[in-house]
Length: 144
Image 1 (cartoon, rainbow, N blue to C red):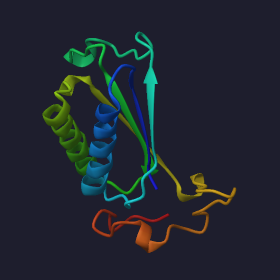
Image 2 (spheres, rainbow, N blue to C red; image 1 turned 90 degrees about the horizontal axis):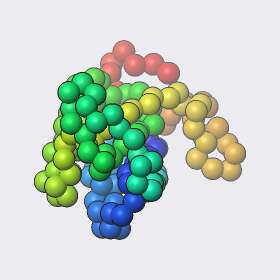
Image 3 (cartoon, rainbow, N blue to C red; image 1 turned 135 degrees about the horizontal axis):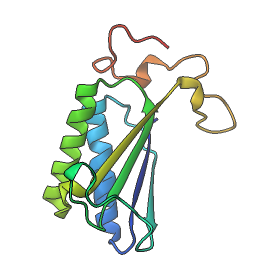
Image 4 (cartoon, rainbow, N blue to C red; image 1 turned 180 degrees about the horizontal axis):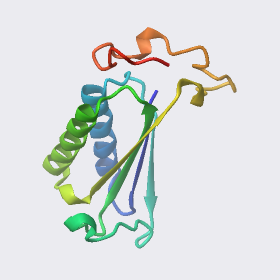
């Protein structure tokens, strides 16, 4: 049920964009314990419309910056999130030669009632079914 939004400057091939989407999807499952439901949006922007500070925190970014934003239920630990970031940038660098400095992440966590998967129904207003959560990733003290 996570939603992944991927923004990048236009001009990359469909294969390049699909590789980014596949890497993000696969690593979300491996590291964040999200279910194998796929909802992703890839948006290309004209040159100059993806603006990333070229030297924030001493990280040298180029005009090829890619923004990856995930919206999901907050069931991952900080360590799982850090492992996700690292795995994604390493794999994108390996497969696409995308500079690790050019991958920017933002994770937004939401509550179950923040989702409607269709038909105007608040899908998880009564809680999330156990089969939608990875029991290995949900902290023992986690409660909705």
